[in-house]
Image (cartoon, rainbow, N blue to C red; front, side):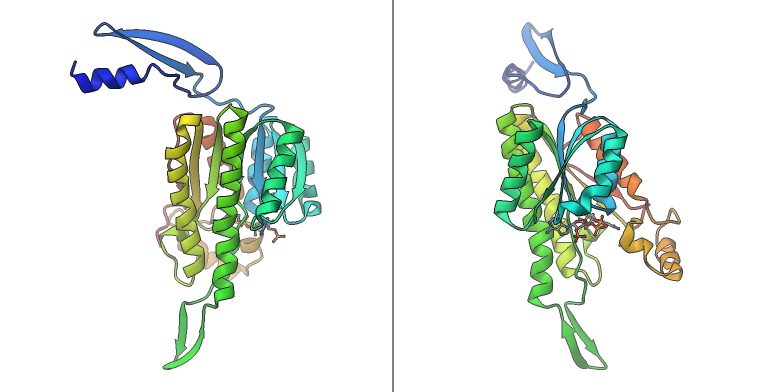
Length: 295
Ligand code: NAP
């Protein structure tokens, strides 16, 4: 065996954390004890604490409801905690313990306090889905018949940056610190979008969705040594309230743009989140959930 392989195997002597219940085994390769500490390959989130931002409706609510079926503890965050009541009761009926917290993800103190409150009441943090997001669409500069009409304002740019990018940074940072302090690893999911490839009329939104996907890769590299996995999900058009409220002819047009012939359902995004929690080898990647659509 060459020396670089044997030294890398030696460095594997340190604890190698996957998940679940610890199972130690040892193998002898060319007279070297190769010791890995493995866990079961399916993460058990029963009684584990998971925070979801923007949980009052849409994808946040769908992901909460899906994970609730695993009997976890959910810290549900939204701007106004009363707006989370419906999600909370569905999750409780599905078997989760639920805590609702008001926080604006753009405000550092709100995020710090919300994560602390949840951890203090529910126990060590095992998951954070950084989902809250908005759109403020518009062209970079709009001209009609050679005349300037309007351009994306700094306010439209900044509002989206603050919630979709800074909000995810603040929640991801808080989650990472709590998970490291809890000493049990964890899972962080950033909600990106198909728009991360650059969508017409979405300068601000596309920039943030590329940003949160790339932050997930950085965090996966930085946090793996603490047993923390980080991924993103990039949905295409999904049937949340925003899309459901559109006229039927617009929805039909949207559906025709998707090769599978329809827009996605929130539960399909929730299944992607569930997969990320369950699969202990999945980290540093982005799940594209867009029915084969390309921008
Ligand atoms: P949604 O229905 O508009 O829900 C977003 C939730 O986030 C709302 O409850 C909203 O509260 C909350 N929120 C907004 N600003 C917040 C803040 N500063 N702090 C805390 N909570 C805040 O959106 P969605 O369609 O479920 O989308 C969820 C995520 O998926 C977003 O990041 C979005 O960009 C992404 N995504 C969605 C689609 C899609 O087709 N739906 C596709 C790709 C990606 P209020 O109602 O009080 O504002």
